[in-house]
Amino acid sequence: MSSKKKNNFFRTFAFRLTLWYAVLFILSLIIIFFISYKILTNDLVHVVDRELLATTDKINRGLHQEGVDQAEVDIREGIEEEGKNRVFYRMLTANLNVVVTSDPLKWPCLNFPILSQWAAMSAGNHFNYHTLSPKDRPYKIRILSRSIDDGRYIVQIGKTMKDEEELAGIYRQVFLGAVFVLLLCGIALSWAEAQRAMKGVKRITSTAQTIGQDGIGHRVELGQEGEEIEDLAGTFNHMLDRIEKLMVGLKEVTNNIAHDLRTPLTRIRGLAEGTLGRKDIEHYQESIGTIVEECDRLAQMINTMLEIAEADAGLKKPEQSSMDLVILARQGYEIFLPVAQDKGISLEFKAPPHPVVVKANASRLQRVMANLLDNAIKFTETKGKVVFEIEKYQDEAVILVKDNGIGIAFKDQTRIFEKFYRVESSRATPGHGLGLSFVKSMVLSMGGSIAVESLPAQGSTFTVRIPL
Image 1: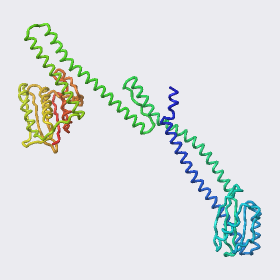
Image 2: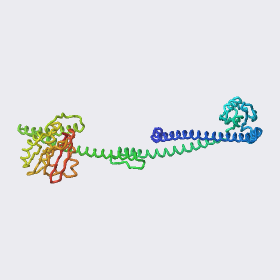
Image 3: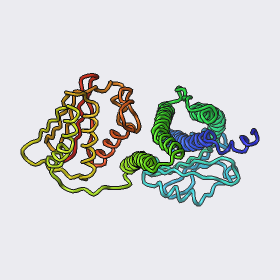
Image 4: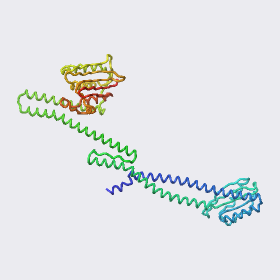
């Protein structure tokens, strides 16, 4: 197990996230270094340029005040003060004749013809800067060529950038050291944050493994890893709730199916066993007739289950056509009127005088109304009343079936449309608990909706809405 974890370490999300953090961090530091280093070196060059320009200003003032001799003295003093190997001085006339210069032997790296070209470029009260990178010296040389004394003379000053380059080198070392420390801290913090983020995922994985071993009753504990992980854990728990609910429903449906199948099968078996002990043909015929009825009942239940499944899955699209709902409903009323009268129930039909045209499947719509009327009559006591009504409301046709029968408890109203679900008060009534489930599936397949309002011992009202 540990070997497998070692081998898969580089494939973990935490490692990849840390690696991405580290790469982005390094790239950001490199960009910051180059930008800051460029700004630093430019500023150092500007500092040197200002120093060189200030020195030429001093020479120019001495030249104006006390003549060429004083300018030569200032230049020689500058050479002695700065050091012969650190500062280069040269003063020329406008015709590029050398007036005074540093010892050329101390500056073998300088190309004097090029210096003369730069001097010529500064003639006419101009100045220019150049940077040399000599091979025999470890540091660069910054050179200013400037015309002074109203263009009669040209002065050139060169200064090694040793101090500036050493400062830039120190900056590089300090920055690289800081980068190394920051990188280690960044990787550590990235790894800790990745582990914290993955803690929620690991908790979900652990819960899933526990569910696989102990059952679906476990849930993921919500942590503080972030909104995304909390949403994931909440969604996972919601999914488990749905699965558990479906499993409970499946168990109930299975139990109901077993119960509804066991009763007719037991009767068929009992009749068959009882018939085997008799020899008269009349008893055989009676038993076979009963067996056929039970088989028809089983076949009807199975066919209804298949129709519900097809309608819910949308596998079989029924043919739909335009029809007058009033005519279709009146036919259903006339069929159930004798049934209601036999039970001593008043069945009343209400419909508008004009047609209510809907686009639906006639067979399914007839069975929907038949199931609702059959339930209303079945669960209404003698001398009760059932109202069958058709209405037109905006862009919908409304089918209302009202009764003043036994009613439905509130806790059962949300479940009566489930397959095989039967309330306690209807257990003794013949049926298999598929009628309302069938009605809902058929209505939904036609783009409609169904709702129920009921009070125990006061009656129920089923409302079906179908688009015109």
